[in-house]
Length: 415
Ligand SMILES: Cc1cc2nc3c(=O)[nH]c(=O)nc-3n(C[C@H](O)[C@H](O)[C@H](O)COP(=O)(O)OP(=O)(O)OC[C@H]3O[C@@H](n4cnc5c(N)ncnc54)[C@H](O)[C@@H]3O)c2cc1C
Image (cartoon, rainbow, N blue to C red; front, side):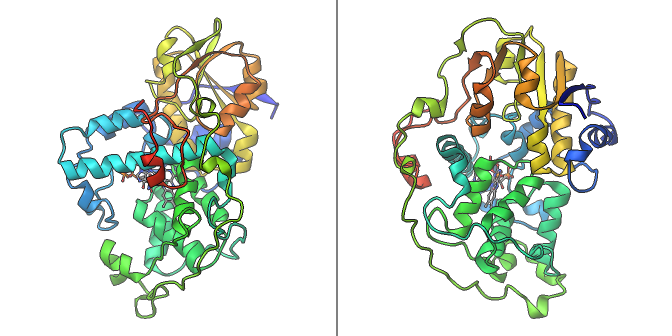
């Protein structure tokens, strides 16, 4: 394939999803991993809006950690839409207004965890690939996939990750803990495997979730044993072929983690918080030829899209990045369904290639700031004449982010 080229607009998703799977196979298949398939969660703004409209927060606090039966789950399953900006955190936060106080508080607290993860990543960037405060094992690849066993709790969670691109928070902690705390494999490979499959996979929340579970953030490891399965998904032990010889009957051995001798000083203080948080107001330097859409912000409320209704939009499948990541088909299908719906509402051009080479030929760009290192790196080499603020739930502050509690205490202004 040439260095970059324009792709046909993918088919609209309201009907048969096979057409989208075929489009992905044809134009991105060499960059994908696994079987050509879609996950049950559809991409696109209308699917996101429908999921939010039908989410009722009642019972969330009590049932958030339930894994099985599925009908008992209290989790919203909104994460893929939140991840790609189809639902902004402020919008989801407002949506639950008026629900039972305990449920609203618990749910909003989880949205703040998401915001905390985003702040960590915005401030530290790729440094989050290393254990931040305690020396949890990072590099030590497994010989075989430790989740692909006969134990139903691990096997069914692994299958759900692959087939649905989703896991409850509880099951994520089970798999991450089993990988590193019990089996001793380095957490980074596990994180990469999650990232490949999760429709909501983000370096911000995935890394903070792994770091938290394996003790790299707090020094305390989350232990996973049969106890949680009996409590959160009791039916699993009933159908598990290893029920009589359960490999996770007992808690994993505790291995106290050493504090890292050199903690990144940016954990305590951000000397350039304005750069971390991005512009407060639109930064307009001139005309733009197109709105550059990034995977961080694919919603119809994307500030750059809204402010420039007459400009065409442009999306680039970043070929070198995708070649490295080898995302699973369902992730790509979700993204393609999302951009197909954008194309049904306004002019959109879709490319595959290197982002800077491709967009360099499009002309000056309007774009929404994204608090991720990839955006900073790419935008430096592009002519971004109109940059719009990121829709924070809490604007980043310059104080400590060493823990969620420290982050919450440090003074921060609401939006
Ligand atoms: C090892 C591990 C890896 C994770 N990887 C990711 C990831 O790649 N992307 C991701 O968005 N979340 C990740 N999480 C956080 C959390 O598990 C998911 O956000 C949540 O399970 C998504 O399902 P939901 O939308 O049904 O959640 P709900 O319980 O309905 O929560 C609503 C929203 O709050 C946010 N949220 C909830 N719990 C957390 C949390 N612990 N940390 C951060 N945000 C949270 C999410 O945006 C979520 O959509 C990870 C957690 C762990 C332990």
